[in-house]
Structures are given as C-alpha cells and as structure tokens.
Amino acid sequence: MTAPVEVITELADALREWLPTQRWFAGKDRAVQHVRPVQAVSLVDGDPALVHAVIEVGQNGSADRYQLLLGLRRDVPEHLGHAWIGTRSELACYDATQDTELTGLLLDLIARGETLAGLRFQHEPEVELETALKSRPVGAEQSNTSLVYGNQYILKLFRKLVTGTNPDLTLHRALRAQRCEHIAEPLGAIEGSVAGEEVTFGMLQRFLPDAADGWAMATASVRDLMAEGDLHADEVGGDFAGEARRLGHAVAEVHADLAAALGTSTEGRELLDSTVDAMHQRLDTVLASVPELGAHEHRLRAAFEAARELTTPIAVQHIHGDLHLGQVLRTVLGWVLIDFEGEPAAPAAERLSLRSPLRDVAGMLRSFDYAAHQLLVGYPGGSSAEDQLTVRALEWARRNRDAFCEGYAEKAGDPREHAALLRALELDKAVYEVAYEHGNRPEWLAVPLSSIARITGS
Ligand SMILES: Nc1ncnc2c1ncn2[C@@H]1O[C@H](COP(=O)(O)OP(=O)(O)O)[C@@H](O)[C@H]1O
Ligand SMILES: O=P(O)(O)O[C@H]1O[C@H](CO)[C@@H](O[C@H]2O[C@H](CO)[C@@H](O)[C@H](O)[C@H]2O)[C@H](O)[C@H]1O
Image: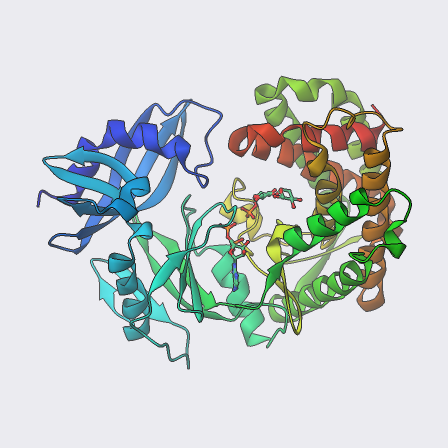
C-alpha cells in the first residue's frame, strides 16, 4: 500500500465532496477550499486496510482539523456502499467507522492499553473491558461519530479536533472521581498528538441500553399535547413536567459535583463585563454570516446590556457548556448527562474556563423552547400567535421551563433570581444556535430565529 498520507492527498477531491454530506461536518455553510493531510498512520495493513488520519479542511480563510478513519478495500461489500468516499489505484476508500470488521480493533486496543502508530489506547484505572465485541454505529443526530460495542460500551470518535485534552474526557474523569450518579461512567480513551500538541481522539463510556433520550421524550410529550383539542398539559398522559423537575435536580447535582471536584470562584465586574462583551462579539460574528438575524440586533444588544447592570458577584465553576435535551438520557434510575464537550465551535480554553452554571440552565430552557416549536417548522399556521398549535407549544414550553427551574431550585439556588443574566444567556445561546443551524441544519434555522423574535418581542 502507498503511504497513508498519500492516500489523503490523492483523495483530496473526493473528500471535498464527501465532507459536506456528513452530519458531523461543521462547515456546511461554506465551500470547502482544500483538504490536506496533517498526519496519517496505518492501523491495519492488508485488505481491508485501516488508516487513521487527521486532515485540515480549509474554508474561507479558516482551517479546521478533523479526524477520519478510512477503510481501503479492493471490493467494497454492498452493506458498506453508503460509506464509500472515492477510489484510488483500484482501491475503494470508505468511512471505516461503518465497518465492523475493522472497528472491533479499537476496543481491543483500549482493553489492552496499547500504543499503536503514536496513538495511545487506554482504559481508565481499575477498569477491565470485555473484548471481541461487535460494534454498530449510533444512528443519532450527533456532531461526532459513536460506535456501540455489544450492549456494553459506547466509543465516541471526536470528529472536529481541539487542541488539548477534550473537556468531555476531563470533566467525565472528574465526575467519576466524585462518584457522580448522573453520568455514564468513562472507561477509556484514545489520545495522541497532532503537530506536537496533545489531542483526544476518542472516549469510551458505559453504554446505557435502557436509556431514552430527553429530546425524544420531550417531543413525544409535545406531540401528545398538540393532538389534544381540549385538554391542557397537566391533563394529558404524556405530561413531561415531572421529568423536567427531576432533570432540574440532576443538573443541580452535577453542578455541585463539578464544583466539589474542580473548584469554584466568585467573580465580580470584570467577568460580567467580559461575558457581556463576548455576547456582543458572538452576535457580530453570526450577523456577518446570517443576515436574517439583523432584524433582532438592536433588541439583542439591549438584552445583553441589561445583564451588565447586575450588582451581585457571579459564582463560577466548570459546567457542561452545551446542555440541551439531546444531552440527557433517562434511565430506569434517573437522568444522566452526556457529552461534556461544550459547544463544538468554541475554543478549548473557553470550554474549560470557569463560567456561571446559569449558562447550562439557559441551555436547557432554550431546549424546552426548541422541543415545543420545532414541530411547527414548515407548518402553515405556525407563525400566528392565535394559532392553536402555537398556543399549545407556548403552553408546553412555559410549563416545562418552570418545572425545570423549580427542580433546580430545590437542590441549588433558584436560577430565576438572576432574571436579566439568565435572559441574556438564553439569547446568547439562541444566537449560537442560529450559527449552528445555519452551518449544520439550514432547514432548522427558523427555530432559533423565531425564538429570538418571541423572547425579545421583535
Ligand atoms: N452512555 C450512553 N448510553 C446510551 N446512549 C448514549 C450514551 N452516550 C451517548 N449516547 C447516544 O449517542 C448520542 C450521541 O452522543 P453524544 O455524546 O451527544 O455525541 P455528540 O458529541 O456527537 O453529539 C446521544 O444522543 C445518545 O443517543
Ligand atoms: O449535541 P451536540 O454537542 O452535537 O450539540 C450541537 O448539536 C445540537 C443538535 O444536535 C444543538 O442543539 C440544538 O438542537 C437541539 C435539538 O436537536 C435542541 O435540543 C437544543 O436546545 C439546540 O441548541 C446544539 O446547540 C449544538 O451545539
């Protein structure tokens, strides 16, 4: 086989076309100008062969690094047809995360704690892993690629790489040390370096086979309410408020465990000013690529400035950083929070900085709003305030947002006591979501845009 780096160089054009078709690719709003190999190593030689690669994707002056696992075969079996990327020198190249014949190796290497071709595969202390389990890709909406082994483990392969240890791994390890009940236990990792800097390539966790994801549960509840002509949320079978309250408990307990494990601090004027300045900066950036946001600029800036008036110091600590209903799983024992990676677009230093836990509360509040309103995207009556389904959506969101805050307040301070900061954080998150949807799911852009209009009254 030719050197793995050359495989990438020869396939650069095919990769340029393939990347934007992948759910995890974060740059769908800009043309891919170049794809270059940063590094590539062979993990398995032969047919099939397995290559681990880091590529640089150039778009509009930016250059992001992504992780790829590439399979190479002379003949690609039919069941891998959907994973095909391109063909070079009579060898078909495809996304190897879909190939169970190759992915079993990753778990086996973690179980044995081996280093291969510069990649460190390791299990957490005192963890013994079962090996030779077959993997299957998770078919979920996600920003990375996860593989489930048997019904025991889930391995997340980070796609867009950040420099330094990924916060997902750092925070999971800290919460494991605290014996936190609301996480899926971290069991291992794939780590290494890129251009001399430490990088996390993957994280292995206990798979929770009985878990239902919060987004699916919440949207099922919204559907139930919308199907009802006369009944209110508290009278409908699928009422979610009890779960929303328990979720408030879980989030408050995770915050307490993160604070106990990694410490807290109390910050004054300076942090508040830099928080508000960052909101304005984010808005500037998003306005440049999403002109539709312009109609709300004035009111957004006014809401951000209102947070500056806060006179009490802010308590800060490590937080989840991108909390929403898709990041919480309901098991038979209670709620579990997953994916502590923070916002995929934020720099690693920001994700690991100490911030107000109100940010996570704001993220959940946004998510209740999302769950209530996304079903109305494309629905003809969806924009009118009197429309029955819109009334139902508003009712559902209000009820569950309140229940979540009450639950949180039962275990920690009441987040609603800091209304101006909470509102600003919620709007800041909605601005982030505008950028996220624009880049990842343009058909959902209306969801955060309409929320901003509702919250600001514009
Ligand atoms: N420990 C787990 N047990 C069961 N399912 C899980 C577990 N961790 C993640 N999942 C499932 O995988 C999906 C993606 O996981 P997540 O960590 O959010 O990945 P991403 O960072 O790519 O968004 C989740 O929405 C959930 O459905
Ligand atoms: O879970 P990720 O780390 O990949 O987070 C990113 O993708 C999320 C969508 O999958 C996105 O969340 C937005 O959509 C959710 C519904 O799909 C909704 O519950 C969230 O409230 C909303 O923010 C998240 O913002 C993004 O970072």
